Image 1: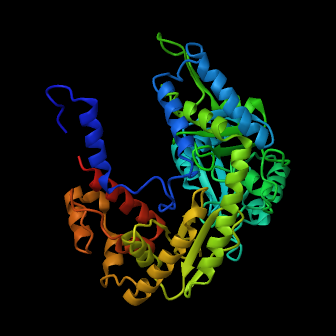
Image 2: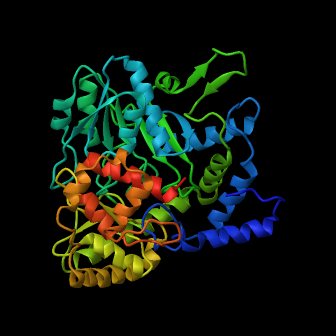
Image 3: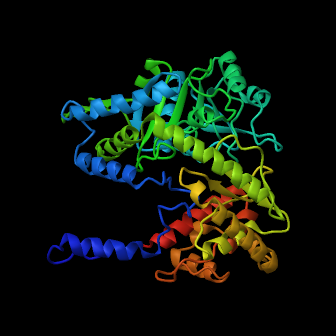
Length: 473
């Protein structure tokens, strides 16, 4: 992109943005079942957008310069703490940053020379990312393949003298089930190890589902042995993106999440988050969303979400060849296919205007499709089920993706670092995946089939190259 010689008008720029968004998935309406969270109430989004814009240029770097940041964060973090068993919190940009800070605090508190994290194979990759950045080993623990929950005895067996933290999920994202938090936290406490509950998805959902009548097990900081918890407000809090909270039971652990540096002659550096300068827009948007919906609003959304989830599970179970994985205790539903290639099903649904999120097989869990049910889903659940049924039948008729003989072995054996982006794009084109600019959205079933057949390290290498090619120079 070249900078224009002269500045462009706001109207011209907005027109260009509208053009660029022409092929984007819609962020409202419920036809995209991942990545976006919709209340179905436009006035809530409008209030959040106005507050976001009002706080856009306020910098969270120095709270003494902008005391509005302190007051808003106190209110937002306080609301999360009141709902989730108390604690002392930090407002962050998202679940990954919340998790990063929790892991940093645990690492700094332990001061082990060879720290490790013990976590279920269903734990979010944000923990692997934190471990990678912070120099920590990951010790994965299998889950029960009937329930998809980790077993406390397996966690206990994995803990050693260098374990700095144990992780459990409420719920785990892949199948929407809540790990046995009380049992895992007790095991961690018995070993003198902190226990973090990843409630990024469920923290601002499970309490409202419980109030709507769902059987939700204890999972928050009120559970003995739980020492920290992450909760995303840009998920079921319905705030604009960039809004999460990490809570610590002990204020001393929160202090360990902070970073300060006086080893230079410039301005004072004290950061509560990984970022330094950051816009207060997301904080303003989260604050406004919580205020605009209020407790009653979240209760109503919880009831609608619970009803929609029950109907969706019932409807999927009735479609020949599809089965729901586990017994979801949240509003995350994953289903696999018997005689139906779920990756082909996803492409068929995409062609009908619906996005269902593919999930690759791993650790004995089959490839499946994931649906996040939100407040708006109930209004379109019958249409969604109709599309899933039609797409399943089309996928059955098309049959599974058949990869060329030797392709998987070829990809697995490639030194991808030795290929430039052009060569990788040619390799992708050889299996019908055109990554060139302007080529349009490729069908992803072949891509997912290749990835599904590869071991995790090879998957990761391919994904890095895929991202490099689509972004270009």
